[in-house]
Length: 481
Image (cartoon, rainbow, N blue to C red):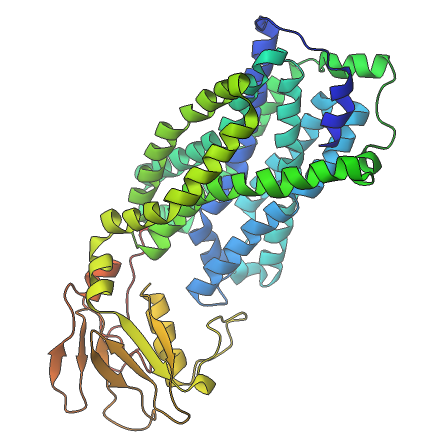
């Protein structure tokens, strides 16, 4: 934002096609930014493995949440990266600022690939991991906006939407590149080696991408508008105070952040990145299958960036953005319902045929989150809810009278959680959607089976009150992702 305000005043309109040098600017800027997005998104794509190695002191579901929080930390500092490197770009130029942001991103990603896990370094491992994510976020905050400005300063005035739209494709192409590398590596070395050490390779590859990116960027010249701005002494002396200290400028920044950028983030990350998590973590689609599905969707959708960028040069930016927001608001709920229906129809059918309700004394129900890994669930309510969460089964929680035994109702059939010392303990055969009554009689509650819903390979008996029972196998979720 600050860099844009210091250049727009001297950016005299010009028309016509772009020269070969200007096309090189678009190509090099876009390619370098693709590599940076690859570095940024390789973390999120491999979040399951990062949770396993860096947050192994907590339950897997909690570890995955922590891994996502570390991923989110990179987003939290992106605005600060934009401020820092935007100001630096005004001082030393766009080209050299690019070199700094790319170097930071490359080193941050590479060191994640060699970072020891929790088993070796203890609590220092996740702390260093988060610090590296912060470095990545700062670098990307400066890179992405700087690349868009750099291209805009080279583009004809009547084609800025078209040429800067190539920069908008970089985030999608970076995710696509990350998926291709992961899929290719998993196919080449196999799932077991990939899970043990192969997941580090995509991070280590960033060293090669960094070298290529630096070589390409070193061939670029400084923006002609920036050179002219420096020659004429028209650089802003107080870019931050001018951008945010004066209300006439600050209100534009707030409107752009909350009225445009926030909505774009919801649309993009919900439609492309969260969809991958939804497929693998909620619907239990095998990781490779989910990654292929998302990669195909990216190939289909990416040309639309160019199409609508060019269209914005004709009808304006605002109508395009508003139409996209409206389309997302109207269709997203239906789209995710459709994903559920086609990706795991048995989950949809089972939840409809056998809705799950947990009835318990509210005093026995705590928040389902083990932050340190040392907390223990000791009540029937907590154990029921923990088992259902691990199975990705939706449930409704109903408050019961004080002192009431916790119970779970599946398809109209109830089972109660009683004192742990009382035998026999009722259980739900989650693997086949059945439950045992107190008399040991077995009654069917729902078809299709819950195990089919979540993609379990084996028939596994789960005790929703106490967890794994002696002589029974624990619930085994699909671990293909």
